[in-house]
Amino acid sequence: MLLLSTCVPSPPLASLDPQDSNDDGQVLESVDVEARPPRPAATLSRSRAVFIPPPPNQSPEARTHAPEPHKPNPPLHSPPRTMARRSGMLLLLAAAALLAAGAGAAVPPSCERIECPAYDVVDSANGFEIRRYKDAMWVSTAPIEDISLVDATRSGFLQLFKYIQGKNAYNETIEMTAPVLTRVAPSDGPFCVSSFVVSFYVPAKNQADPPPAEGLRVQRWAGARYAAVRRFGGFVADADVGKQAALLEASLQGTRWAAPVSDGRKADPASEYTVAQYNSPFEFSGRVNEIWMLFDTMAASDM
Image (cartoon, rainbow, N blue to C red):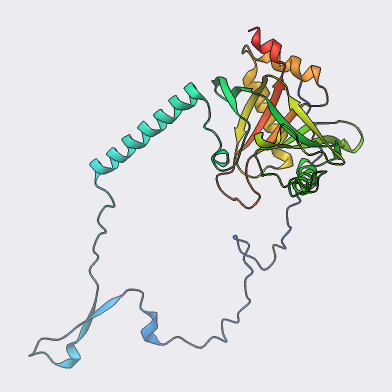
């Protein structure tokens, strides 16, 4: 059963003094009504008016003001055009659903700009995707004890970023890759301190001889490695990752992948699930994140 940490409290809501505020929370200014000067009579008109000149044989005193005639706004779209647009949107949605069901989620856009580990989609269904990763190498931090995945990821990222900037035994600069992985081992102990390991993918050109570095270790996935994956967007938050992992686990129930995933997690109790982040912190839209549950290759190949 998936262990979900519930120790990250929701941020307290800011309190507002309801006195001197309206329904929208805006502060109201106290005004002495009797002290206000009276408005000129010309400004009290409630409708727009246009001047109608008198006929030539009419005296100036007979001048009047009449309200501007109302002109209804034309419809934004004619009914046939609106129906055509709706039909086109339905066709696009149907096509996207067919693609998602047949080939799985598209490769994250960041993998078109920087190097990512290669994989094949073995299976996909509503809520999950099964991938087979080929030989891959990762450089990882030592376990980081923290109550926050976000804080632990930031700490591990800084260590690894210094590594690729040349703080390694070879003083070698290494290209940035994606995704940034954070392996999670939740805890229900005192203060709910969990263990996190942050990893960068090592580019293919550096995998023959990756530079060593103090406090970091290099791990190679020999042969194929399988992962059950669920994708979600936005910025990763402590309150969300446990929910996303639970949704992935629930989507696997009743499928042929439930047992291999469960066995894989039992074989590696230090890794309940992994959070994969593909975007720079400075990208605010189109963000791609994933929950991974890695499992045994032999169990998958026997199916």
